[in-house]
Length: 412
Image (cartoon, rainbow, N blue to C red; front, side, top):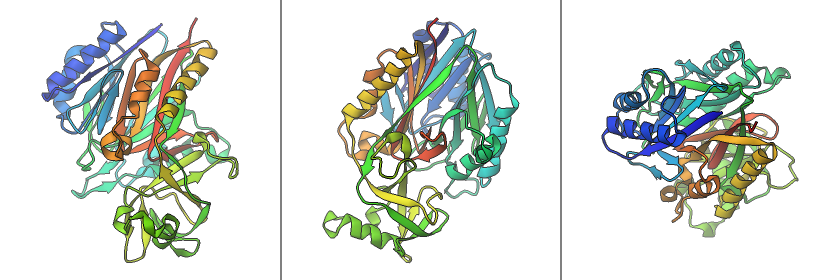
């Protein structure tokens, strides 16, 4: 058997918060010690003191992996932009955890992703590995804010895994992380190290462990297909051979009340990587958020640089269906049950923009995940970029999306 548990705290004292969350995780798992701890906290916590509090309860033995987050979600608790923190623990005699770290992320995403994947490939596993990885979205190495990009990082990983030469990604999911919506410096934990601008990975293997995932979008297509006809990095200059922002203005219509200044963080473009005429399928779509408009060129500044010339896109409308989120979670659990497997631990990667305070909702969609999972240990966090595996097998960055991962083991 494998045992897992999660704990939450919102104490303002970082040491006590880490200790409280770790103790609650052990209590839910009904164990005294563990082999692995995944830790999360908002940027309001001191990273060294928080880690020290976790270690005071768990001791020096467990491997530790973690990152700053905009907010934290567990079975009964949910919060963001405060002093929220969470800890998940895993104890098993059959499941093995391997951790990997690359510290050269800043301005070096492709090579960093390539090196991280090569580390993963260099290890031997008992059965198919399940990969969860994080990268720091915030780059303040020069003192000014820049973003570490997920697209080149994933391209480097795909290169190492041989995806372009007929190879395959392992079962994988991940996140581009940050600690708040003000884009302050972000920190990560790797065993007893406190770091910034890193990429790290966790691989679970052995004991028949598997990771299942479900993509849960908060957007639906709201236009016909259009084509990017000119782009420079993350800037879309032209759509259908016209200035991109003007094309969007025509699609949205003059009665929307939106100005170009409103496009940043409001406009979302979707890319259908499946059947173009097969309708909307969560596992085939990747969303891209616009973060601003270049007024001089009437261009759209996107969060990722992957909408290149020739990309077919659709304008997406943001729409939360809370019943859909509950139903999709229950559907994933039903698939696990039908395969005679036991859920061990759930991990929810949620776009910070989907939180009620930022999406304009008076409800929290993550509450539906909590309700559907029941007592299955859950650790989730609000973040900047969500990464999931599409139906094609490719692993891509997403926006305005929730990615639910559940590890399971055979019941027998």
